[in-house]
Image (cartoon, rainbow, N blue to C red):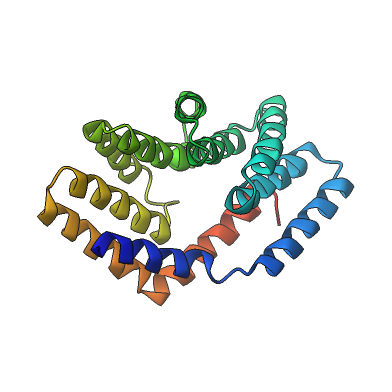
Length: 218
């Protein structure tokens, strides 16, 4: 019951602030920018953003734009965008129940990340998160914890507080299924503290703004 309440609470905070109408306006704006963009780096960044936005509301559209983003990112050798989009697409396949495909694309993201030698490797975080979710669904809790823990090993210079909150929640979910209730409650408390901290949310928004500048959206 506690976990269900936390899921609803987190969902309200993260997604409830963006109405469907506001999201529709944002999608239309991104599509208009994409139609006008001639620079491949900008087009890849816009396709990436469309993928992430559609992942919330239309999995098939997310896959459509995601495949285009990955193809273009690979063409211009922008591994950061390719890795990030692969992670989100993996989550979309997971939500559709296609666990083998979700595993495939997330492992591809990890393979690409191993080719990077700087802080950009942290764009693999969505892939680690999705692999944790997939292995949780498969009942392989040790492997799920491995991937959730890998998320905490990423460079703290580009991690955001919201990411930490979901990582703690992911581990809490696994610990609950393993009947390690004390550990589950501890992780839930850590997650809740971040979700309830307005400063953490402000910092997360600022970090996303900086990342948008870095990949060419602003």
